[in-house]
Amino acid sequence: MVTEIEKKVIDAKKASIALASVDTKTKDLALEAMASALDAARNSILKANAQDLTNAETLHSEGTLSQALLDRLKVTDSKIDGMIAGIRDVMELADPVGRTMDCLELDTGLDLYQVSCPIGLIGVIFESRPDVVPQVMSLCLKSGNATAFKGGSEALYSNRTIFDILVKAIENTDGMPKNAFQLMETREEVMDILSLDAYIDLLIPRGSNAFVKFIQDNTKIPVLGHSDGICHVYVDREADLEKAYRVVFDSKVQYPAVCNAMETLLIHRDIVDDFTATMMKRFSEAGVELRSDELTYDIARNIGLKKIDRASDADWDCEYNDLIVSIKVVDSVNDAIEHINTHGSHHTDAIVTEDPQARRIFISLVDSSSVIVNASTRFADGFRYGKGAEVGISTNKIHARGPVGMEGLVIYKYVLLGNGEKVADYTGSNAKPFTHRKLQSNLSDVLNN
Image (tube, rainbow, N blue to C red; front, side, top):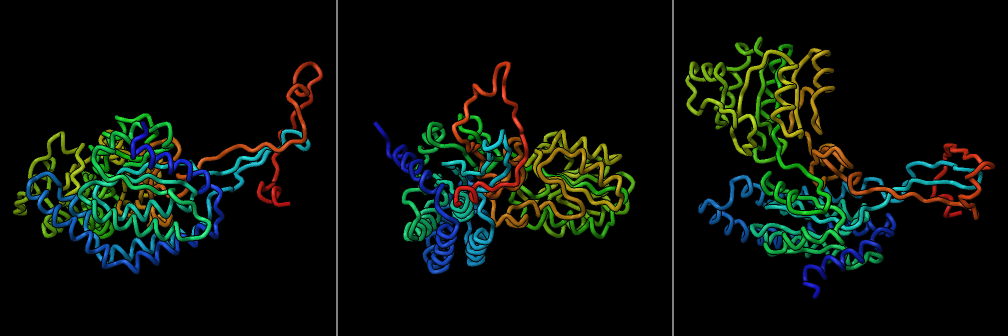
């Protein structure tokens, strides 16, 4: 017997075939309808979010919902502005579907095209953040992918309201298929979704490291994502200290509850005396708790700081998602790199330096999806990277890495155009040779002529 969840997923899978062939103009009209609908429904969205926030405050006070998830849950007029801007940014991006990536002549009149196409049906499982719905839906729509969403119960009313607004706008756009976007709401549906590898082509989890790790460990479906966001800033011996103060402070304090916030600060031993005390005071004024190695712990105590503790081994592997930072002194750029590659999560790591050699070494050897020089780790974001929005940040090394926009939602197919050729002619003692000649040919131009 087909369950209600399976029916929704099967309907979305069927709709993904039709969505893959929708032209760019129609998709952009649907995106504009989504943006306009969100703008017109602000009061409904804020009212639904207020209901979620009331329930979430209770869960937080009971200790069953973290402060990080509570922070991510809140929707404001400014966040709605961001949702709308993100959708309209996606409209301005080139359609990634149907692009000829390569063309190779196998023989005269026998041409092989490598052409971009949608992945198919994307499953998105996320905690707390209602803005995930318009971000991911806009990117999936433009890239021709149907999507099944499963949000957390803490954002039930916000997710439902935003989803219904967007789907109504899409399905009222001429030429757009129905049922391409589905929303699941109950906790039990998570395990059901994880078992539907016959229909869902890719899973994108968005949430805490424990949440993402659970998804990765309990499904056969390929998972795009990261389980930890343990990010570092290394302040080199040749750093401009004014730049370093700005970069380090922003990386930790600007928004500590996100995966691209700095968790560990590494300081070259030669600049400890010049840099550390001032940086610690700035952290202290912003309410940041310090977890320090022995040297920097003594500095903090000598300048009278109170929110300070010695770092344990566990701190170097911890994603705080809070106003807490671990601090360690290293002897060289290579020591910093070794620490990052050992204790980091391959997410985002930064160096502050004016030394070209240190910069080159850091870029070459740090094994992370984003490596940043003289700027905040908080720049590692799909919107800031010019992708319109992002479906998530991936630390995978297969298919897509870093902040993933539409380029991570398309794959490719091979299309061979021939004229009755047969393989038998290309085998045996009198085999015809292949030419294997690169062509500057576009499949869409060929098909339209």
